[in-house]
Image (tube, rainbow, N blue to C red):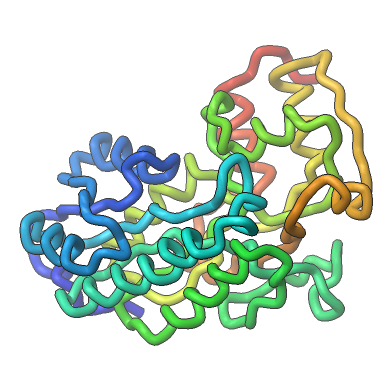
Amino acid sequence: MGFPSNGSSDKPLKFLIYGKTGWIGGLLGKLCESQGIEYIYGSGRLEDRNSLISDLESVKPTHVFNAAGVTGRPNVDWCESHKVETIRTNVVGTLTLADVCRDKGLILINYATGCIFEYDQNHPLGSGIGFKEEDIPNFMGSFYSKTKAMVEDLLKNYENVCTLRVRMPISSDLTNPRNFITKIAKYDKVVDIPNSMTILDELLPISLEMAKRNLTGIWNFTNPGVVSHNEILQMYKDYIEPNFTWKNFTLEEQAKVIVAARSNNEMDGGKLKKEFPELLSIKESLIRYVFKPNQKTPVA
């Protein structure tokens, strides 16, 4: 399932990355450095077609990565009151970049979201039945998710795009405010629901490999299986902070303190696991890539 892009020739890899100031974009640059891959951060704005064309013509990349996008600060509630800004980047900008890349015969690795689904009668909580890549999004509880579902559907028409559905990203850097663990460890109360999540330390290198293989289409970009918020916080307590405590509250109680609803779901990881058999389950990956490297206390 590849695309005959410019990256399929024998010339050395050269990646053009959008999202320099973002979390994932910054990590991509470090990964390229560690692997000896030449890379350049794009200077054009996604919604400005001419600036993107200028980037592509001057850089002449073999592949393009899009880690730019609006998620809202401090969270997705921001998007509810900044809808035009959200559309401009998440929809117009992403589509423009995909279109320009297609004209140039380039694959676009697009870091998207899996927060476009929620548990339903066909995918019940705790059933182990996850949403597959071909499933139609069923969560429209936030404007952010609406824009992401919209652009994913449109991008299906671009045979040069590799869409990676990231969920609740986690990394070994527990100081990063965007890290899901860092977020919930600071909350007064958390809901306790199993979710599929993305361990960036393991999966971002895989995304570079996907580019090398010229893979396209939609991919659930999460570790196989689910983990609950309480399970993560218990690991945090066991490995990092033995005196750590937390409190739970219900979805109904949570709804009273947030503007937009939150997505909770399990993603089917079979497609990615088949392509990369070495991929660890979510709990195994959490321990290997996040908690053991940060371990401060012996675990019984």
